[in-house]
Length: 102
Image (tube, rainbow, N blue to C red; front, side, top):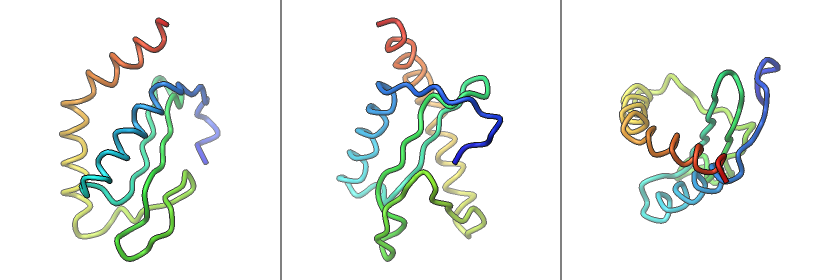
């Protein structure tokens, strides 16, 4: 599912932490479904898919799932995600570094 140019070297600790967070958000009804891929230097270190496509379409989100990016709210959702990622990226990077040190 990834670009042939992307090397894949997964970090299972980071994947489990992200999956746990997505499950937590879904249980609080703050998330329906999502895909998260973390790249570092053109290398996939984490890929997580969780939840369903929508509140109407209950098909599970998978790595092969393609979400429409040109919807009316996509820009706002993208901006919100980027703002959250910017605030939380330090925690994710530290978690990945801590996992690599073990």
